[in-house]
Image (cartoon, rainbow, N blue to C red; front, side, top):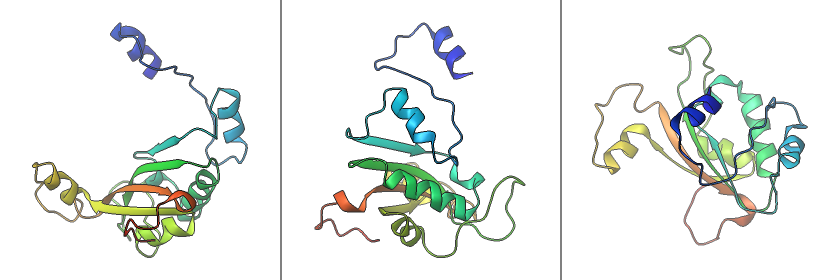
Length: 155
């Protein structure tokens, strides 16, 4: 679908795009990226928007750990559910126990988080506060071994 949308738009991409089809839970998927031209020595931004909620907590940890070890200058952006118990969609999985910063740290990341309501308000677009606006967090993370020591970040 994305290829069709890009082709139909008539726009020219401002970067080289090389789609790679892979199972993110398969340990060999990073080698497929390398075959497609990804260089682990270059800075990489991993965007996990709307993905982690579909993975079991141990699968999330495995993927995040693999990404933390995938290169030497990685950054990560994600949305995370911190909701536990019954989820509003049958495919969604509850959050791991503990605060996101702690379990991100256990996977090799220094993370800062804010709720969707906090993020939206910081852009001058406040959301009505509900159980769900505070149950989702935006995450910004950097590999622990490359994070400057004087940032005051937790994790």
